[in-house]
Amino acid sequence: MRPTALPPSSWDFDPEAWPDDDCVMADGDLEPSTIVDAYGHGAFPMPHRGRLLWWSPVQRGVLEPPSLHVTRSMRRSARRFSVTVDTAFDDVVSACADPQRPGAWIDSGMREAYLRLHDLGWAHSVEARDADGSLVGGVYGLAIGRLFAGESMFHRATDASKVAVMALADLVGPGALIDVQWQTPHLASLGVVEWPRAAYLDVLPSLVDAPPFQWT
Image (tube, rainbow, N blue to C red; front, side, top):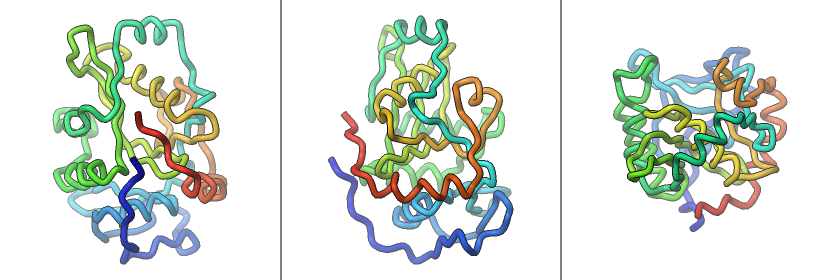
């Protein structure tokens, strides 16, 4: 199913006007057209201290699917879990938004915005399940053309989120790009590297204008 067409955004995401800082804009709204347009221009929303801010990191964390580092431990874990796609989007977002998680930032407005984007065919989840089918890990994000913009992931069992990322990389395949926003030591261990903002913005049009992924 192709994503639902959206009206033009009422906000202007112009990289030429952005400062040399990770935070590039403030305020705006979380309408589907606004979020999709922002991602298509290299920005994403993240609230901070009650205010909606828009970010485009000077050093962008990205993962090229063929560069995913798959360890022997991850391969063993992949045999313990089953993977589903788009069967528990709400549950994955809720788990990622758990206020007890360190660094929790997903508020009710963000949660509702991405649930709406999922209903419209723009946002997706990949879920890891244990032997009895219980949800033990997952990742969710926005898909535009050949870009998958990862928002957050969680795990309740060792390596469950890594298995979800493995499945995501297989699903989107070579030629796609997984945006993880910022590199962390954990993400670096999976093969995430940093691109300068200019390099990221340079390849973005070819990604977002490509045919969409098949989420099956």
